[in-house]
Amino acid sequence: MAVIEENTNEEKKSISFVEQLVEEDLAEGKNGGRIQTRFPPEPNGYLHIGHAKAICMDFGVAEKYNGVCNLRFDDTNPSKENNEYVENILHDISWLGFKWGNIYYASDYFQKLWDFAIWMIKKGRAYVDEQTPEQIAEQKGTPTEPGRPSPYRDRPIEENLELFNKMNTPEAVEGSMVLRAKLDMANPNMHFRDPIMYRIIQTPHHRTGTKWHCYPMYDFAHGQSDYFEGVTHSICTLEFVPHRPLYNEFIDFLKEYDGTASEGLNDNRPRQIEFNRLNLTYTVMSKRKLHTLVDEHLVNGWDDPRMPTLCGMRRRGYSPESIRMFINSIGYTKFDALNDMALLEASVREDLNKKATRVSAVLDPVKLVITNYPDGQTEEMVAINNPEDENSSTHTITFSKNLWIERADFMEDAPKKFFRMTPGKEVRLKNAYIIKCTGCTKDENGNIIEIQAEYDPESKSGMAGANRKVKGTLHWVSCDHCKKAEVREYDRLFNIENPSADDRDFRELLNPESLKVYNNCYVENYAAERKPGEYLQFQRIGYFMADLDTTSEHPVFNKTVGLKDTWAKQNKK
Image 1 (cartoon, rainbow, N blue to C red):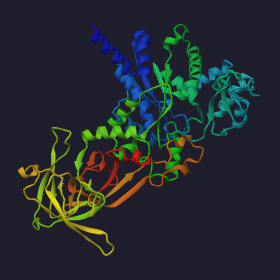
Image 2 (image 1 turned 180 degrees about the horizontal axis):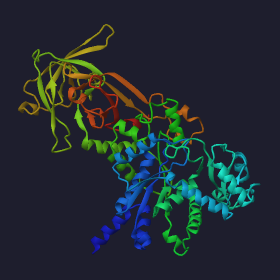
Image 3 (image 1 turned 90 degrees about the vertical axis):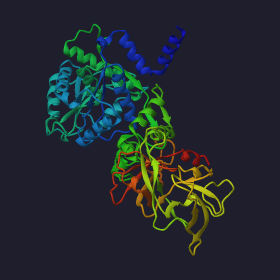
Image 4 (image 1 turned 60 degrees about the vertical axis):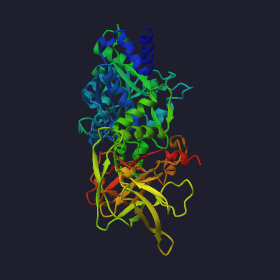
């Protein structure tokens, strides 16, 4: 019995506080044991890794407790939204490995919300305000001082109805009028000080066209949409904590409007639960700032591999499993924190180590000539695609007299602990032979342009003579059996750890060295044939993926992450 109890306690410790609350509701029989969540993105940009945390929670809870998670697009601001964003959001969620139950749009409820707003006006709970946005903001007061009533707060109901209908006409001027709920201008919660319910927007909607000219605000549409859909648990991030009382207030009004009895109200309303946002070092999550980066061409689009967007991470070579692993490792709390980018990269390394195909690539080449290898002879050396997988397949790489190796792998006058190539010492060429360096050739400026070595014909990998131990193993590609390639190497997008907390213009904080392009690289032919979406490890260098720009004649690779976290060490110096 003691063992069983210990395991039960361990299981309890492993679940998040959100899941604990869900389990409490299930134990109490709320909602008839039904679990329904939703992920409600606004289609005004591309999803980033912060959204991925919410996706993992919303979909994960539904999946774990045999419920359903619906996808609802919060399309209440047509001036910022379009179908491009809708399609990308669908793609990103699927890529992460989740499936939604139904797809809804806030615009599905525009008529219902409009009718509900009319009812609130008739009940004396809403009014049309013709103050400017600046005047409204000023008369709302401060967190320590109560607000002042709008001069339009007590206008007659019929006049409010007439003006509200005018707000939904092509002639209505944006910013000239808003519909406000009549709540409490002295409430310490600023969101209760007569919040705006509707505003005029004359931009055609991506779904409804020009049918509407007046659109609901998020706080008025969100809770009601949850209620219309039967959401049991409305899970969101901590910035919505002060919005929760207003969320519940509007649902109270909606239940009265629907004629629903108030008995059992708390059991039947969606339960709102808030968790901490995901913030990463050396990047920004603000959608406004990400838009600026794209619109001002400070990056190469939403899917630039330096961006924290899911499409950018996918293009860079991150796997969906590694992102989910990272999110699971940092957990869900009630306290905001700044997560180290190195933790994400560690998850990427851990996952890619298990699945990436090992290939040979030389990024900074220098020629190596095996002087005693027969002219014109070639051999096909067998390379294991992934030594971490005991059932791994293999491919062959061509060996010849003339090879490319990394320039950093040779040193003419090497220190004692330099275990790569130096005159008079032996090294092994990966999957091939042991060689001994015999010298090098330099140009008129003293730059090394060629290295010479001799090979031991009895030392081929797999042969008896191959058991002779040498301290260094180098990767290589055959000069006549490889493809020239472009390699893009990425660093942190910003120069400082927390750019969001800096008072300077965030553009000034961008890292000018965040992208380096190498055009004189060589990859083995097998690597050149790999496509975007295939995970690769360039042996001894790092993890890479073919970029969307790659062609059969011009392979292009993005560096996903190095084999080790060298970046952190460099910045400690």
